[in-house]
Image 1 (tube, helix red, strand yellow):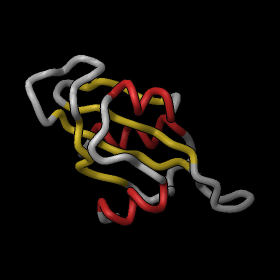
Image 2 (cartoon, rainbow, N blue to C red; image 1 turned 45 degrees about the vertical axis):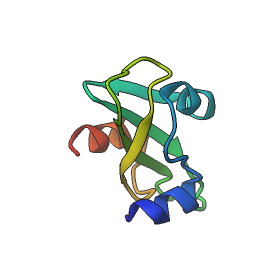
Image 3 (cartoon, rainbow, N blue to C red; image 1 turned 180 degrees about the horizontal axis):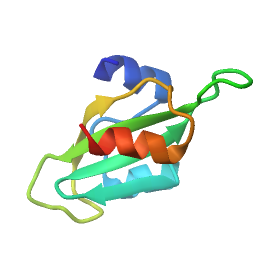
Length: 91
């Protein structure tokens, strides 16, 4: 999915801080120079509903108040949060 589409569909902020992401989604992981997000998006009964997002630090500040920018977003195609995070780790 294109970044602009993901920002609109899943209401992903860009840029953001890890602290801001953690206040919106419960599945946020720091992974090296990136921040990974697994979010839930209802697609209807019985359909996959989890998406993954990858943010990258834009400055040398890797604290919770450092600025991150959105780099990749999946469709809401994952069966659970673990698969969404696994997708994000591979990006």
